[in-house]
Every structure is written in structure tokens, then in C-alpha cells.
Amino acid sequence: MNKAIIRGRRIISSMLGTVLAMSFFMNTAQAAEPSATKQLRMPAHIKVKKAVNDPSAVKYDADLLLVMPKEGAEQEAIDKAFEDVHGTVVGYMGEGALKCYVVKTEKGKMYDTEKKLGKDQKNFRCVGRNYKLKAQFVPNDTSFPAEWHLAAINCPKAWDHSMGNIQKVAVFDTGCQANITDLSGKTQKGYDATTVGAKLTVLGGPGLLGDLLGGLGGALSGGAQTDPHGHGTWVATTACARANNTANTAGVSPNSTVYPVRIAGSDGQTDDIAIMAGLLNMMSSGNRIVNISYGAPPPWGLTNALIHAPLHIYMQTYHDLKGGLIFMSSGNDAQFDPNPKMHYVNVVTAIDPSLSLTDFSNYGLSSTFTAPGKGIVCSDTDGTVTTVDGTSFSSPIAAAVAALVWNANPALPNVAVESILKASCFKAGAAPWTPYYGYGMPDANRAVRMARGGL
Image (cartoon, rainbow, N blue to C red):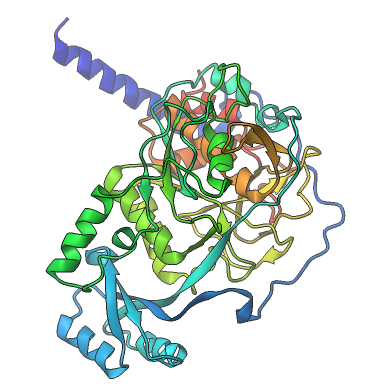
């Protein structure tokens, strides 16, 4: 048969699958899969811990600011503004609408400089600090219980319809140990966003030297196939550990590959700049799913679009213009998060085996989904099985369901994948959304069937 005709039929088939899927989640009453009957339990005794409003509760780099200029602002005016506040540009990252200067302020003058530059709305889009963030996990003893979370989200049934290896899951973390059985042969080189060359276009600041160093940063990156901490390996194997290899555990999307992005080292700490550098790499490498299991206590965590303004511009650009999906852990402070929901970030709370909110999970206005986050069996850096707790693991579980959906229908746009996840969810009663669970817990099997047009 003529190759052009074959290609045309494939394109039409793909488009038809997309149309069918879009129709499916727009009108779930006509779904081939019956409505999910599993119910999330409303928390019985939530003791609301007020968000900590003390700025000292979260750390940041002293005397360092992230400053994003407005497009079209004159370079001379920008330089003059920095000179007037005695700020020194030590580097920058991104270009065009994503250009962000890293400015060193006079010692002890960060607040005053931040205020003055923030008022200059003619030249600057936003000004922020470089906040320090920590991994969102709760240490637990090693054990080997049943992987209850796979059954809870209907993973085994989903695997019957979505076992392709098309989709990558980018794990923003401490790297991952690529040589262990569950990750061997399926972990890409990845990217190290903690190096100077990756984080900034830097040393000499803006200019030819900075451009050269920035361009070499990614090419010379040693990747992130080792894990000095362990957190990244736990997250990666929770999402994508191999199945049917007679070893350890199975991930939610076992045939997907892992793209590790190191944003933290052995101390498990990261900052806004490292995450922004990682997102720049996502935009150039074409990765469509990002998991970030890091944060700070509400209201200072990554859901706060005001204090993390430069980072949020990067995240929104990745979602709106690059078609990516970001999944983020809600945090483990057992606190209410008052920050509003942002359409470009999916915040995931954690439930326990009783299908109720865990005693450590944050929840609030920013919640998008929930997923298992207690007693999660995964692999450690030495290849042994370990059990972990935390929203650090509910987030990659939700991200991996998105990978299953995209494996089933790669033609779907990111907003369609999000809509399918929401439409497939197990709910808490009749409520379409709650601050505890967002839109609910994605049903992997139902989501995959919806992505395939209900077939």
C-alpha cells in the first residue's frame, strides 16, 4: 500500500482516538467503564494547624534576589536600576520572557533592595528570593508489605491497556541510582541542575562568557544517574520501577523511562534556582511530565505564587507554552495551605490504606489530587526493598498515572490528560472537589480507557 496513504490513516486514527477521548471525559455519563464505586473517606478528626506566618520558618539565600525584567525594557534602564540599589549581577538564566537576573545585594540590604526593585514596574516583571526547600518524606522502617497503592488506583487493570514505553517521567530530586535492578536500563543520563554551569549562565555574568558557560552547562553535565541521598531513588521506583523482573517492586508506570534531574544533593535540600534550571532543561529536552517532591511549610511552600514568583513564571510557561505537566507534593506538616490553586501545577495530598487523609499530609485550596502516601514499598539505593511515607510518594504516583494515559494516547494535549485524570477520580461522596483530596484519587484503569476513547 502507498506509504503516504498508510501515514494518512495513522494520523486519522490518532486524531480519532483523541476526539473520542475528549468526547469521553466531556461526557462521562456515556463512558464504557462504569462509574467508580470506591469511595475516599472524609477525614473524621482533622485538627487544623494554622499556617505558620512567621517568615523565619523558611530559609533563603541572604543578600540574593531573583529579578525578572519586563520584555522590551531597555538594558540601560535595567543596569541603572541595579546600580541605584548597589546590586551586583552575578549571573542570569533563561532568555526572552524567561530571563532572570541573579542579583547580589549589599550585605544586610536585601529587604530594602527587594522593595525598591519591586516598585519599579516599568522595568521589572517580578522580584523574588531564592528560597530553600526540603524533601517531603517521613522516614520509616524497612519492610515488605503488599503494594496496596497499586490496587487502590487500579494499576494492574490499566497495564492491560497501557504498557508502552513512550512517556518519560522527569524526577526532580537527588538523582536516582540507575544501576539497581528496578531502574537498570530504563534511566536516562538526565541533568544535574545543582552545578554552577546549570544554575546560572554565570561567573562573568551576562555577556559572551556567560552565554558560553550556560550553553556548556547542560552538555557537560554529568547527568544524575547516582543518588547521594536516596529520596530520588524512592520517588523514581515508586513511579516507574520495572515489573515482571522477579525483583523488588513494580512502579505505577513500569514501562516508562526515568529522566532524573538533580536539584538537591546529599542533604536533601534544594532552592528556586535549581528548580528553574531544571525546568529550562525540560523546555529544551521535550520532557512532558515533571515530579517535584519538595517544599516548605504553608504558606511559604511552592504553592505560593507571590514569594516564588520567578519560579511560577517558569512553571506556567512549561505548562501553557510547552505542553508539560507538573506534579507537586502538598507537604507533610499536617497544615492547611491557604494558597489558591494554580492551573499549571497539580498538587497531590496523601491518603493511607483506609483511603483517608494521612495524619501528616497538608491540604487546602491548592489541592488537585490525592494518592496513596503511607506504607509505600519502593527500592533503595542499594537495591533492597524499603517502605516510605510522605506526600513525596503520592505525587509521583499521580504523575505516573499521567504517564500511563499518555502511553495509551500520545496525541493528547496536556490539558486533556489533566481533564481525564479529574474525570476518572474516586471521590469523597458526591463532592466534586474537597480541600483534602482535590478532585479525588485518579483511577488508572478508567483513565487509560478514557484516553483510548473508552475502548
